[in-house]
Length: 128
Figure: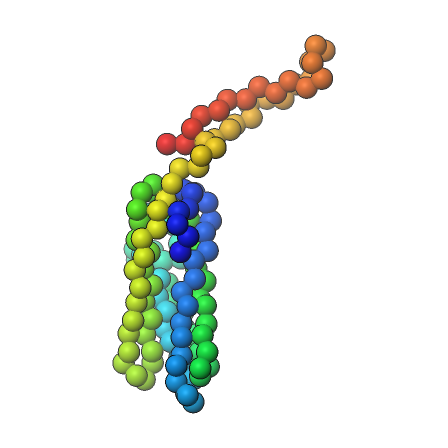
């Protein structure tokens, strides 16, 4: 995970799965757990599940796009279950969500003025 992310901006996180088996391809169910602090494919009513196959002696990255909604330290959790082996593993990481340092700039109107070649009136307000 990155050290920090900006609230309301898309972020791709990756769960990397490893298969240390010598001969067997593993079929793995990967689950992104729901957290109300993020907008993601996981919801309170429905989990986001993916099934992937990992060839022997290799790894596979499973990407997830999330949008942080709440400022502060937020937890992201991914679980993986291997079919036929009764093996489950997971990882929980803390992600720091910050406010954009640039704030919000909204263009109110644009006008051409005889005194200046271009005058732009805008209002700046920081994101809270």
